[in-house]
Amino acid sequence: MKKILLINRGTDTDNFGDRAINFTLQKLLEKEGFYVDSVNYTQVFSGKGIINSLKQVISISRTARKNYDVALIDGGQLIQDNKTFPLSFLLWTFFLHTFSTARIVLYSEGVDEKFGSRALSLFRRGMRYVDRICVRDYNSQANLRMLFNRDSEVAPDCVFAISKIAQVQPKNEYNTLFGISTYRTISRYKHLDITEDEYLTQQAEIISPYLPHVKLIYNTDSDLKYARKFKDFIKDQQGIELELIDIPNLDAYVNTIASSKSVISSRMHALIIAKSFGKEIHPVERNRKLQTFIAEHHRENDMEEYYHMISQSLKRTVQD
Image (cartoon, rainbow, N blue to C red; front, top):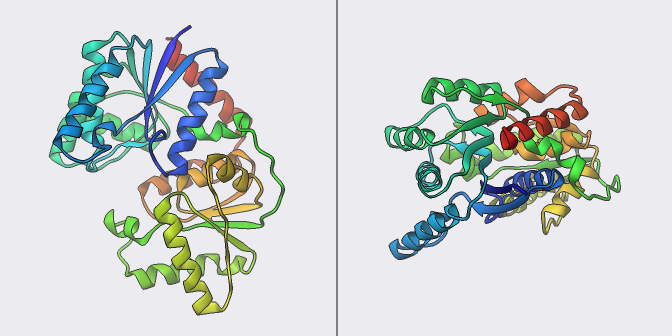
């Protein structure tokens, strides 16, 4: 039995999108008869202080020695310039290359288009150890070729397959779900050049045609806090009391989306899960990632075809 190591953000995060990536890939691989472990991509940054960081580096090196056949660095926009991803990528690829015979594969990846010189250098050094790459969209494929001179296969984001492997009990309870992203995320990455009041007003205008039949959902703990703020904003401005759905875990998150008619969100994996279950989606464009998603997936898509493409690309990635 082949041993697969999944390296992603889905094991130590409050982000339901990242959890969905890890869950979907693990179940798809187990369905094919593989043994699967999952670890945190940003493990070295999981605590405070130099001593802790050194302990995490040692832990990464120990994991790399466990005789995995394939190591998948998988899912989400992991190839981007932020505080944790560039060094995390280099550490994992270097230790896997040095201490194991595992094939190192990038799978279902998103690749950003802008990097600072330090981040670009770290990613380029790590790319030397990667054996195969499968990206989730054609924009990522072009960025990978332009910035890292690497070829790649394209297959839909793995979470499009979640409806095939998740155990859900949809109840058709909700008409329209709206997931708002925090203003801090918007302003930090300079996705929109507007004030917070303008942002709240803009988001209220987006859901206005669907009121009062709108329920609020969230992807992260910070989104939950901001959804409460948005709920108060709608009540103050329009006198409407929106329901904020309690979502304790990934199962509840998937089941909530599967029980809806449509989803409005700027969180890509909320939209992907909705499409997987055949729901209407209304993407709120806020960055290049959402622009790419809209261009490639905001139309009538055959989910059976998507599932086949994902399954076949994953088999090629693991078995070749």
